[in-house]
Image 1 (cartoon, rainbow, N blue to C red):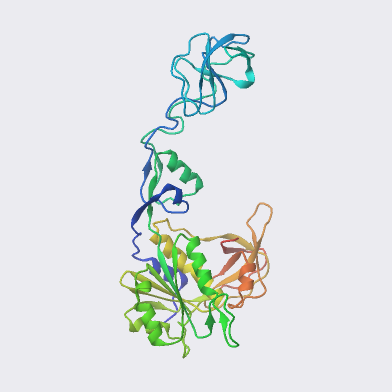
Image 2: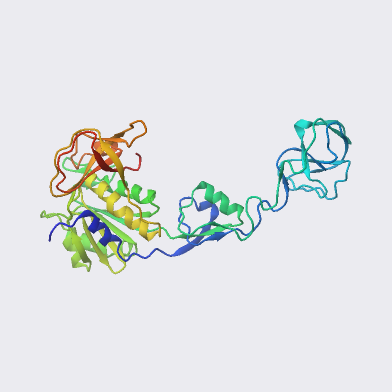
Length: 403
């Protein structure tokens, strides 16, 4: 089986994806969720003419500098004054309170001198229409303010609540089951034996899934045994997910049992091995609607391939618009010619005074070195067979999530 180009692999992974269904959740829990339907306002905001300042509700034509006005009552937020403001009247009012009938402006507190309980003097004139928020100034009932497919940020959540929504329709989170494999692995926090290592890929991919809006499901670590692998893969926790991610065991060694075990229990293989560095042994297949992404076991390879291949799959399942993660930069150091696989070189970005950033490759590029990946904030994209490039030449990069 020949090596598949990266872009072709991405297209095959997302091909035919149908966005997940819609569920209703409390608006207070909606941050970071993808809106499933358009939202139109259910009410006017504000629902009445409201004072924008503390002061006195008055008639502007009578509230000239030096005018003495009779205080006839008070209006507070949530407690309106019932009555009408006459020519020489004033109503004590606070920010957010409904403006009483008859008043057309607010004599702000700084421009008013209260003489006693019944009298206030205007030290400056109050122009008609000042310091009043008109009914519906922000939005009117029926205004379409939030569109389906929007990933809700804190401002959107606040707006939806103000529009009158206690619950909002959102796309269901994609459930991503994550299965680590290997006799050598122990869970984080467990002291490894002399020939073992800590399983770091699972927690890293789970964090990536959460950051993308998905719901990770930990299937734990399965030893290199066909029966144990088959039982876990065919079990309900794997099969009820939207995506099954396997970590390791998909290469060509004697202990790489995952690919064959997946085939044995009914997975239809779409492709295996792609023209990429790091991450050549990537695998993709399906059990009916369940998509299976086999990531490499090397930690850097797993994380890079998660960003490149799992991220667009989750994006499609959420109904979000596809986007090109690459952007322009320039090289901050010379780079050698590339081989026949697309290379994603870990690097650091440096600002360049208004121009595109400079991407400097890190000296250590081993696919097992997580410390180098954590130190990087970008991936420098080197196409297959790229010729050697000099510092200052244009390049393409992908920013890492913390970059």
